[in-house]
Length: 72
Image (cartoon, rainbow, N blue to C red; front, side, top):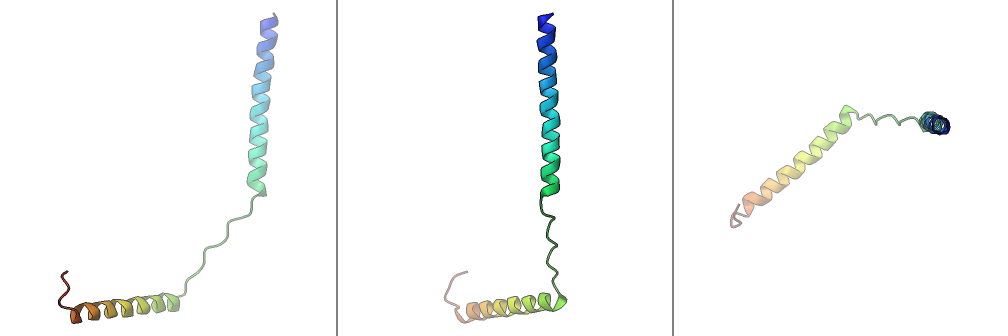
């Protein structure tokens, strides 16, 4: 009979620990800050970045064409 009482006690402890864990996880999830919205990029910004990158690429290619002694 004593073994049965201990078994019930262990079972109740495990159940209580599980319930406590669920409550703590739920509370911490609700307490966190909401995610920040993603930054919006305008078409003008995209165009500006593309223009800058294209200019750098042109400069690189011009540097390579004038430096013909460098092996590729």
